[in-house]
Amino acid sequence: MEIVFLALILVLAIFLGFELISKVPATLHTPLMSGANAISGITLVGALLAAGTGSGTQELATWLGAGAVVFATVNVVGGYLVTDRMLGLFKQRSKPTEKDGRP
Amino acid sequence: MLSQFYINAVYVIAAILFILGLKLLSKPKTARTGNLLSALGMLVAIVVTLLSKEIVDWTTIIVCLAIGSVIGVLASRLVALTAMPQMVAVFNGLGGGASMLVAWVALFGSSERFVAIAVTLSVVIGGITFAGSGIAWGKLSAVLASKPLLFLGQRFINATLFIALIVCAVLFVVEPAPTSSYLYAIIGIALLLGILTVLPIGGADMPVVISLLNSYSGLAACAAGLAINNVILIVSGALVGAAGIILTNIMCKAMNRSLANVLFSGFGAQKSAAKVEGQANPITPEDAYLILEAANSVAFVPGYGMAVAQAQHVVHELGTLLETRGTDVTYAIHPVAGRMPGHMNVLLAEANVSYDQLLEMDDINPKMNTIDVAVVIGANDVVNPAAREDESSPIYGMPIINVDAAKTVFVLKRSLASGFSGVDNPLFFNSNTRMLFGDAKQSISSLITEFKD
Image 1: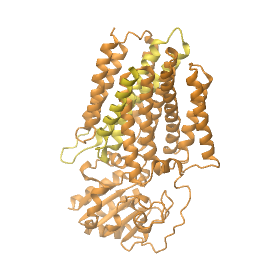
Image 2: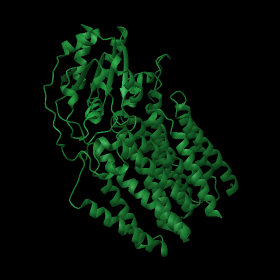
Image 3: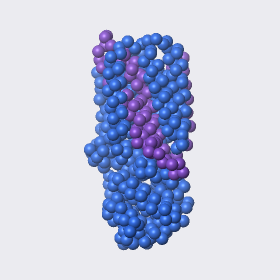
Image 4: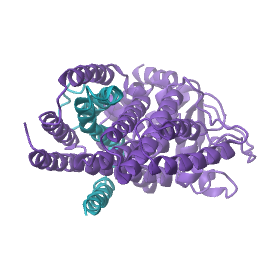
């Protein structure tokens, strides 16, 4: 039953992803990609659990978990910040151009 | 400390924030808010995980979070926008690598068959993403040659590796263990496959590769979620995986090629036999200025050459000069121009070009015949009429920006050399085409000087 439930969530999420993305204008393809990439850094949640629980008994597990936390944190922090930086550059002419794009 | 029920409830909130965030990301006006919502979802998910009673060791976590955050902040602030494609590649790779490690650790807690299968999937996809992104980074930052790298027996080696991978995977799943030598073999083969599948792909096909690796990084997280039985990983990973596939598909369609063709054909490695003969008409900046000055409408068509020459700022300056004289200025952008999806849009946004001046191929083509001057800056294959007319051409069928329909076409280029595809461009020899030879940035700068004098 558990596996069926997980599979159902998986399928629904995939369909939702298709629906959400299919209408994005080409102008936003790069920020969309880097924003989506930052979301894939959600693996950090798994990494935290891996690094925080296996210690003491399994040294290798802790090391692997620690590596995963570093990788995923770079992915999450860098991904969101760089997406925000890019989106700050997209401006419309009618609005007065503020210099808020550069962090 | 929170029980699993409350943690899962908060994960649902995080998932909703991700979905809303992605939805808002699809409109320029709301995109920034969307990204913030998505980041908030991530923060919520991380905080609630840290409150989980499963976590007992804090020092490792805090140190690693700190290291990762510092690297992430520095990377996102310091990297130039022109280096964005390789930056995205690196982030993709790190996400994939992290998922691979997370799945590996899952084996220390469980040796169920289902877990072993999910771990195998995650390790394979994550490993390919990690190594493939490394190669993509190398090609994009010119550490490696960006040309397709083909060698004898490449397909045979890939096929052998693939079979070996399946054999190892089966043997591993039969008897899963975190230090199984089959697991080591799987990791090694996945990394090797990542390297070998990206090496033969040329620079101009990078938009496809990057969006595909983006998709893989999501799928790896999703598989890791299955391995550790974590719903938020499954949902978010699947969302990103699906998004990446859609984007990959858009890129492939924009080149009229199948994904298999992009990945395996080593496109652009050989020079095409289709030769174009004719006389190109060079033009001086002075004469180009006279034509531009008289034009009522000008469309700039940028390509990777604009990024290489860092010409986006001077292009915008010239565009603004023309506009102050009452000329209608637009920027026509092909979906695969540049090295990643939306590459040109980001560069022009950096140069302060308003996004409502950026037109997609399907919007500009119907009115191309009303444009007085189309200025092609460092683009080649995406404006090659052979794609429309010459059935024997390797790029035949690829949708292009029909600049040849404009009254006059300026092509800013160093020489008459063919583009990435190796196909000669008959556009250069058209009677309404004028070649403005030289570095794109310098050519435009001299046009600006003409306007200012």
